Amino acid sequence: MLLNTNMMKAIDMPLSQSIDETYKKLKSMALAINKGKGIIILADMGSLLDFDKKLTSETGIKTKVVKNVSTPIALEMLRHVLYDMEDIDNVYEQAKFVEDNCNKIVVAKKKELAILSVCATGKGSSIIAKNILEELIDKYYADKIKIIPVDLENAKDVFKKMQDRYYILAVVGTIDPILPIPFFPINQLMQSEIQQVFFHLLDGNINGIFMLPENKANYTIFEIAKDLLEKYVKFINPKYAITKIRKFIEKIEYNPKNEEYVLDLMIHMGCMLDRCLSKIDIKYNNLDLYKEKEKLLFDKIIIALKDIEQDYNIKISDDEVAYIVKIITTKK
Image (cartoon, rainbow, N blue to C red; front, side):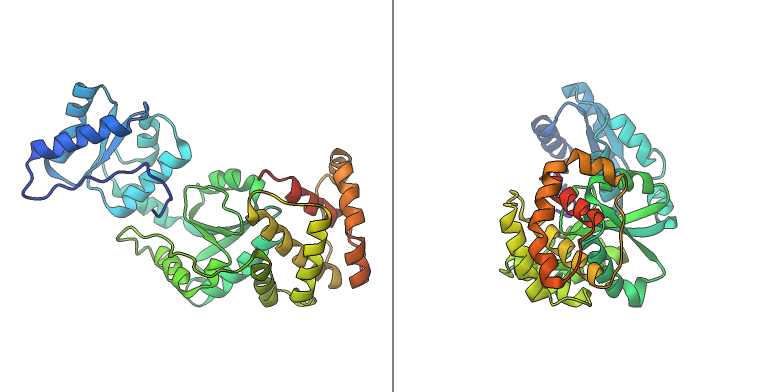
């Protein structure tokens, strides 16, 4: 549940159950779930550690055994499977669980801890997510955990590159980048129940399987955007800004299947207005090439922004427009 996958299955072995009965359960499950790349058995001790050879000889399924299993080791192993999806030999070697399964966890703990805050551009909701995280962890974790804003398009590459230096605990944002680590939506991270789960993760107290509590709040994405902006912008009235941004979205007929992208755009534009009023400039790399590539959409956005520019008596730069275009053209 923590890693949002059904690729790990559980088999209990009560003291009243024979080894043969347990093996038959394992064999039956292995035949049912095998996807052709093999199976890794996570076991704690005893006869369970010898099931791999028997299972392979009787079914032909390639099998590996990880010994002395614990919940952190199981999670670490599953992260490799979800992220790498390679042959089990590669996953097994990468995890370094051949002799001492605890080595990987010990090495990981020596790395600097980090959390990714993600949005479509890296200039909007990821900054708000970073602010929320800094407030949450300031008292107990400020010097222990680095918060890294990243744009959605590069999230997977950044995650992969930074694993050598950082032990990345979680990802926070409006849009789930689908990484093999827990994802916390920023609006839910304001809730005490979600924060409790979050702190359990930071503390390393993963002694059992848990999942995020159900989000029972029935807020619209417009209310969520307003609430988030109210706490973290300085120069705009979020309620008024969201009304204007909503009209802009209707004008350009932006209607992605995933509402998270609309939320991301609204938060980004709220931050953009705050930047414009405080005269903070941002730059878009290779702007001229991007304008040429997306010329029709670029012109459409510039026209649609006229009302907002007049209302706020500002000029929205082409660099800012480019980031809006980037959100709208990001894969949904």
